[in-house]
Image (tube, rainbow, N blue to C red):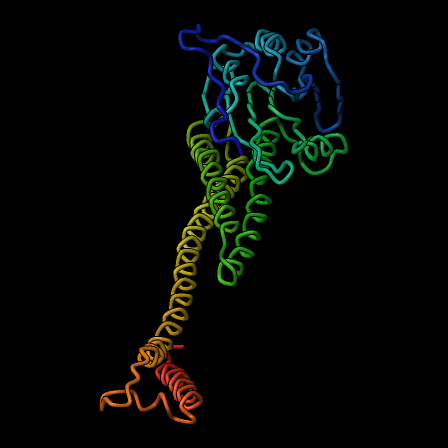
Length: 355
């Protein structure tokens, strides 16, 4: 995951300046208009169709994916009366999740996490809702919203019988719940690492531990503020979240709390595993040093014996000469003494549980 994904303008750039960031594919726009009995989907609608959608009585959702082109974003902003600073936030990806309340609409920024080639990626989702209209801008492909689009097309559930506030809840719920598969994958990797840390701690495991801690830290940074966004939405805007919608957004809030709890739990588990890794390395080093110490201790008396008899002081006239030098069985006797001494020391170490 990219550590700092936010795109900035050079210092001194006028507020509201729209600039292209990234090299993504072409912008794709879908216009959904619906109520309980009618539904239409328009690909790449014209400005006239935008304006017609703002004047009819149908609920409409303008779904924009691949947000890279400033000209397209500026045109949509002029058509729907969006604030220039909000348009700037759409293009400058990596924004902190937030909610702003304007006279005609509410503006939300959320982060949608997903896996791409086993790497965690963040897709910024910007939402405008008000006056029966909902605009969504996804910095990526927006594949996570495809089940919602299909529900609209097929008329499944309540989505076509409710207003755009229910559609907003549906999209917010998708964004928040997208974190659960990621965290489930991280949890499985942590369980595997627990066994590996105890069985065979090595540098590869340490690298994986640090990578997981880094990913969780960045997920926490990206997802923690979303709980505050939903809380503000529930408490601030009674029109956006009325009595019928409050249970739904409260459920989103509960899910966001669960996501944060899982992230914090996994971070603590990884911190504990790092301590276990260091302890395992220390224990392995202690085992190695214990074996080497036992070997050295066994050879100390043996070295003393061969050192004494290696002096070879031989003088038949001296009463202090070594009589063992002339023993017929002296050499095998010394070997026997050394073997008995080594075995005796090993048994003594075993009895004292030093081995």
